[in-house]
Length: 304
Image (cartoon, rainbow, N blue to C red; front, side, top):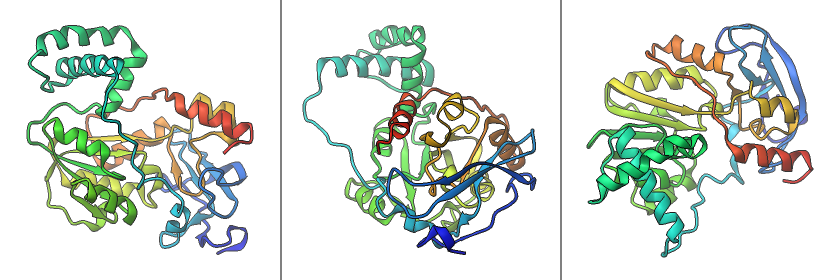
């Protein structure tokens, strides 16, 4: 099918990929106001109250979805400055103490002072969540193997390498892979399922805003389960379609991002995905991301 979607081929997708229930239309004629992909798109939500997954219908074909990423940003790198401000140095010192206390990461020779100061972050929930997100809630595993699926230019992996991990990345964007390799990060190209990693290979796998982009999220999580060592950790960050910001901003919500976001999870559907794949124990929780609110305001006001 092409129709109103112009250059991006797509096919009907009437049923939920997790529980096979029908979907109820919640948004129609959505357009990509972020990176200019062609077409208008509809979003449905599963009618099963125990699920609540949202998805595009029609959905881009797997061989066509690359057309939605021509102007995407995954290969971009953040500008760096040689000098760090005093405020940033202090912030880093406090975070290192917090990570040492909660996640067992090593700090500088002033580790005792850093840990005592880092306890202050427990008094500030917002700053504590930011510090948790910076290391994606991963506890230290000396020389542990870490895979970042959708690693982009590899900047985050470099920071985790400095914290003692053996890092490896994966991305489907050839430009992102080139940027990561130029920084000295070992990165593969393609999907996780295509890599044929050995069983029980990684201590940790992270997917930061990736699962909403894949055509078959269950297959991706099943592969994570296979290549993860017993007792290992998988961390997923993804938009929450049941969030308050989605209810407020509706079609202007930043988390929609059609047509790249193929599936948008709720807490219930994420729990269902992980339970069906065998992950135990599971922790599924919401978090506040202020940039989503800011971006959604811009989209509501007609900005890009």
